[in-house]
Length: 162
Image 1 (tube, rainbow, N blue to C red):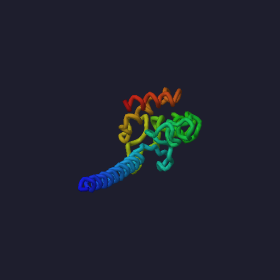
Image 2: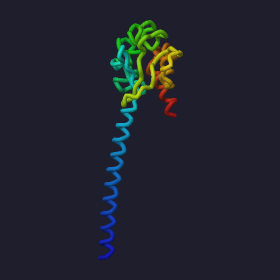
Image 3: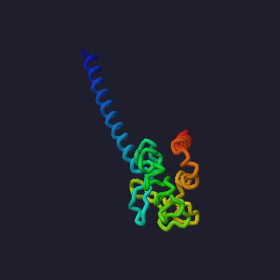
Image 4: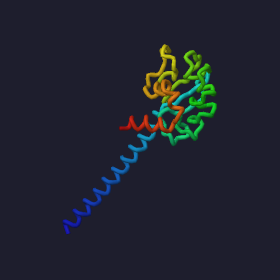
């Protein structure tokens, strides 16, 4: 009878410990999701940088991603896309474009908390130009990227995740 009570006590303790573990694991996952969402690098354009024009490091399945060709920001035809050569954020002549060396208002990169990662600009003399490697790749490899955005995404993010 003493062993039976001890076994029941162990089962109760084990169940309580398991419940505590599950709760801690769930909280950890929720926190990491929130932190991950906040740390996504987003591009804002316009004179006051109040126009969202895409997420740099979001999945190609995310409609807000510059890598999602079915979304507004990954399309080569949408006026808000940095890939649209005729759009204000994708041309080489617009004062809002990262691809214009003389752009007066190049887009800015911000994380979810509003921390600046610098300007997305091809102008290497701009002291506030981003130092983010992926952003610099986007600027420098643009002509290659627009030929096949999904292929470039797969190659770039596959290599980063190895």
